Length: 349
Ligand code: C2O
Image (cartoon, rainbow, N blue to C red):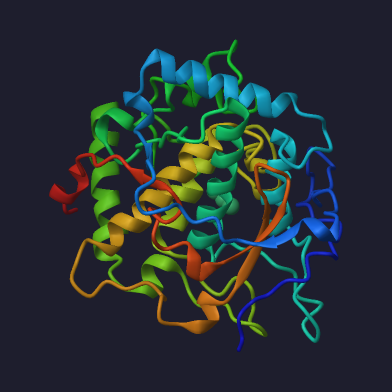
């Protein structure tokens, strides 16, 4: 088998980009061996599902609860693996080379972006983040919202993420891109001609979504390319990962920082709370893509993909090993997305 299985007991200092603005290392606290377990916590078929809703359609009460959950996560001790910054570091560790591949590929540093691991890794990552949030709130049914940037009403940062008194606020962002500025789903941070009128931007966005979802009809185009043991870890990026995923990261981050920190670069991205609704939306689009046409398949018949694994801390601070094969059915993971209109399906470029 050429599945990727990591030796996570060895965590190396990460490789930061040049001119990095924080010099943090990203390895999680080392787990006591007794706390390393295999994932088996599937939702029972008649359990209540957590329903992830569009961020622009939730009520005040929900927002207050989300704010409280994030505040509780931020208030955990610094070395608690469920702490908000620790969670951000989990993302950093998997992106910026903290884990190396097993012998004889020990000089290869893992990056779970730009390959077929983008969707499954982030699905698991968000899953554990949501469970931690639910447990801190004492509500196991609590679900993250999704930033519905592919719908017209969702094409701005959810306004409560920009309220300076909120735990969802984050300082290092582009002040020109705060609500109600319409997001540019195909944003280029080096294109300074930034004054497209809103209605125009909305139609560009819809046509762009059509291209990334409908025209990217093969698994290579949509999911990214296979990365097996012995390969280069970043063989090829999928359509949605490249944009809107990467582009919205850059669009949110501070334009005057070297890598559009915090959202615009891996080592700091998950320090901004808006990372999470951004990722639930990307995750949601994976499920939608598969249903868009007969015969759309991801790599679910490829054992190297299915048997690859990752490790995360759960809400009880257990260190849990998960496999790609266990994340396809979100109902087994206890959640679904609210069904909403897909306006881009009607807007071929
Ligand atoms: Cu791991 Cu949005 O990136």
